[in-house]
Picture 1 (cartoon, rainbow, N blue to C red):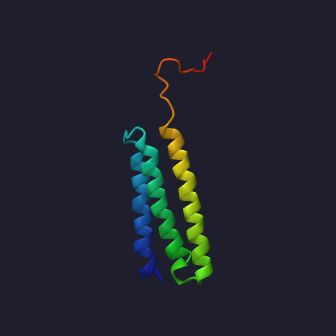
Picture 2 (cartoon, one colour):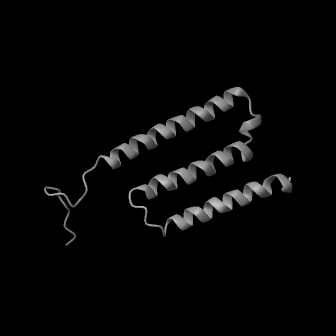
Picture 3 (cartoon, rainbow, N blue to C red):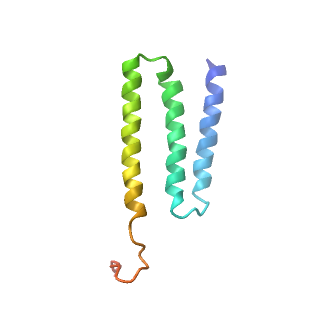
Length: 99
């Protein structure tokens, strides 16, 4: 059991370190996309190995794939919203006052 889970644990720790390192890398608008990508890889690893989706019955696999597809669709819409917003430095943009 340990022989099978140790490489997976190491991969998850490496992805965790990548997430932590990402906090200190200035990627601008792409930092959220990269963070979601890393989190998606971690989700797939946990789903396939710890939740045993590879050996599950087809209905459970279909439900898991439909869930992932729906989440991908929601993230896509979120990114589309973020990428189409006007930057705060454009003329005519209303900036809330802090005082």
